[in-house]
Length: 167
Image (cartoon, rainbow, N blue to C red; front, side):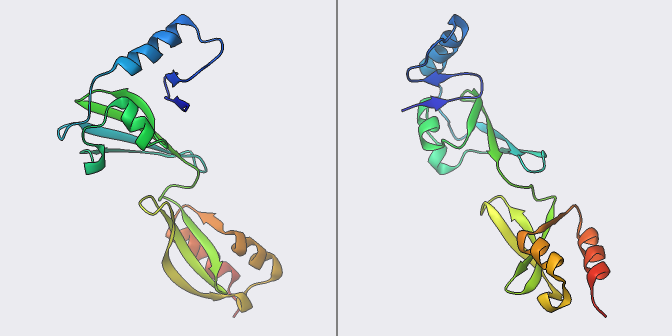
């Protein structure tokens, strides 16, 4: 198995690792700290599609308790570990989507819906049904809204809808 950590920690065979990287690898493997109920978990979420970051500080979840750094890497491979002690665990998670500061106007079942990204579900959820239907749109607008059009505010969504409505 091959695991990697943000600071260059790697397990497995790697060619050309310098002495500093080898020291970090040994240091990470030798880390005897485990997550306890008082450990502070700081997670930085980086959203690739918009470049925004969101930082959360939480208590460990039940499935994190008692995990060593190596156990954590095996159980949560989507996270990159920046720091790992029994007092503080600092994580990074890169999400290939937009953050919840953005709205997506998209056709769903021939109706334009306003969606927003939900981190817990790792998917967009519908937050508003609009009155805009495919009959109100030209071919180019239908193509655009089938893919989804991104907005920075709900006001921008409403202005766009008002600008394309047929009267």
